[in-house]
Amino acid sequence: MLQDCDDLQRRKVDNHDTGEMSWQSNDSSCMNNSLHSKEERNDEFQNFISYFPVPNFAKYFSLDDFVKDDDTKIENFINSVAFWEGRFANANGVGLNCATGLTYDGHQIDHSTSDIHDPLHEFSSPAKEALHLNMIALALDGNPTARLFFEHSQIIIEKLVNENGKRASTESLLPMKLHLTPNTETYLLDLLERKFDSYETFDKKYPGFGSLLPWFKVKDDGADPQPDWASRIPSLDNGQFIWSLLALEHVLMNTSNFLSENVANQQNILRRQALATRILEKIKKIKKTTVTMFYHGDGKVRAIAYIKDIYGDPLNASNYKGNGKSFINDPYEGEMMTTFMALMCRWKEMGYDEEEGEKIWKFKQSKLKRTIYKSKLFGDIPVEEGYWYSSHEKWKYLVLPYLDSDINRRVFMNGEKARLIHSIENNIPGLFASVTKPTTHGRYYPKYASECGIPSISCQKVLFENIVTPYASFPTILAHRNVGLAWYWMMLKGSKMQGLYGSTESITANGKKICPVLTWDSKITTVVAICGGVSKFTREFMKKQGLYDKFISTINREWGAVFNDGNEQNEFNDSQFTATEDISFTKLLPQKFLPKSPREFDFVQTTKSEKENGKSKKIK
Image 1 (cartoon, rainbow, N blue to C red):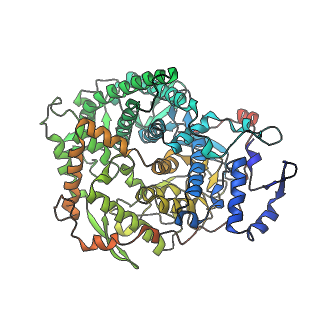
Image 2 (tube, one colour; image 1 turned 60 degrees about the horizontal axis):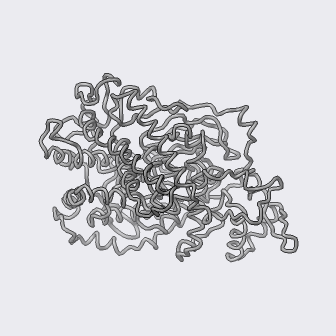
Image 3 (cartoon, rainbow, N blue to C red; image 1 turned 60 degrees about the vertical axis):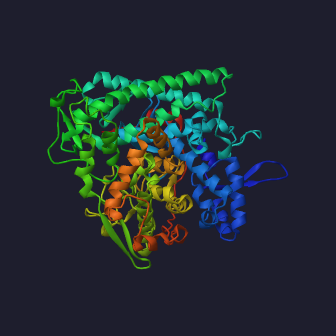
């Protein structure tokens, strides 16, 4: 049971004479830890993690580990992240419905133990599905971190230790040893087949959603629209979903790493190809249905499409309408849908001019703006204006190859430096992103706080500057892996920010309150970033389709018009940008840390019978 790994209650001590394990009270270990050298603490961690990768592993690392680029320590850290975040993502009834292969939005956790607590979020969205598809694509492509993330599903933790809490001497539980199990490939393909069965069942049942998804309720026999999404569908979330499907299709068709003489591999190649075909058939429909559902004309893409008849023909434009004022015209995560429509929709077949997609870029041009972050230490930093400047707004960088555009990359890097500088100069122990709010101990059903960010460089009013969340580090991880990981690590070190299902949703800047929730957005975005995102797959997909050059030239044109005096080329003559580029990310490490609290999670997992007697209630 997981209580055997409870580092908060006891500390493992090796008896070299007998090979037995004994345990000291936490009181003595706390006293001794203050006297331990860094080397001794690391040795203790290595001994501990070889026995079991502990949930609250962040305390065994230091800022120096990330500064000095210690490959072994960073690999251990990343492997531990993948191991525990994977526990959430692969746990039936927590992050996943195994019967259907569909994600759940997440689950609440107990304020005291971090074990699951009523209610289960029995709903999901295309964005959660997108993250799941991203991780599956990365794992199928052979990414070791992504493989480990799923490898956890192949291991029942309780079976790894005997009744005395000891493991067999031949077993190795060091996370880096867990990936690349032969069964992982088969497991992932099984999971995808169930998932696509669920997608296709939903499509047949509700054709009016155009082979895309609203927010939906997850059941063991499939999905149905959430009551408040029964006759409407979002475009932003589905943009994330569509490109994630395309990234996965590219990976499924790449079978170059298989050995033809292996029968199991031959079978998996056929399964991959069949799944890829299903995706392409789905995308073929979506290229048309996105136009009928979301296109309002004159370059306007509806943020939400309202459906008259969810059982009706998805190619009947009269079945859909918008509210006439809410459009996806942002340069943030919503751009994934507008990019897809501009590049790939079958405009001519749908009765429009072939260049209709260009009108989309023209309509949204005014929303891409340059603004200045005024730093006390570094002077004026030109950045792209944010909505709230929540890290969530940078989701598109996980998925599409924006950073291949030199102009866009330099603007992005500036923005991430400004994000870190803002926290440093304002003594903020973490970073901001839209997230569920912390609550008083013992209170559940927390509300969502979208308006988290940086007021001086956002176009909307920021309401929350006292909530930080580990996942807000994901864009910085893309910009500079080790510095981003250092900020992520720092927030994980906060009280009750690591539990039995990985990272906790959010924490107040004073360290006194946490949000007792697990969600895909606040957890798995970071893991996707650690794996490098899926832009390498969408890049190759675009190249194969002859769309890559058009994508890059469009991004150069749009960002060049705002940040480079209309120059689309890779020549930057802006002295302000040059000055900012001289600021090294390694100078922007966290300086203010979350206050420590005497209250930590008591890692006690409820027994199977207790769980059966008190099944999770569901939040609607």
